[in-house]
Length: 49
Image 1 (tube, rainbow, N blue to C red):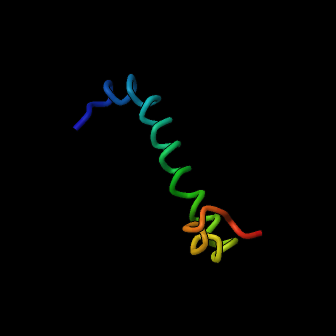
Image 2 (cartoon, rainbow, N blue to C red):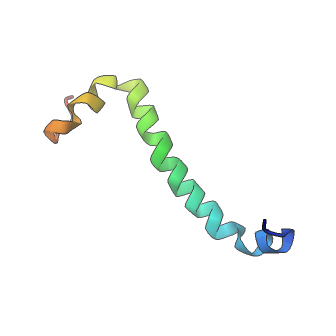
């Protein structure tokens, strides 16, 4: 476990890493909700409009 001092010094890199990872996870979920057919058609290399 990290101490409070370690978290204070290392929270920013972890915060940005988690932000990027969460964006990479949330964005496909939003696309899935708004355009479910797009996920099943990505195998062709293009997203139908």
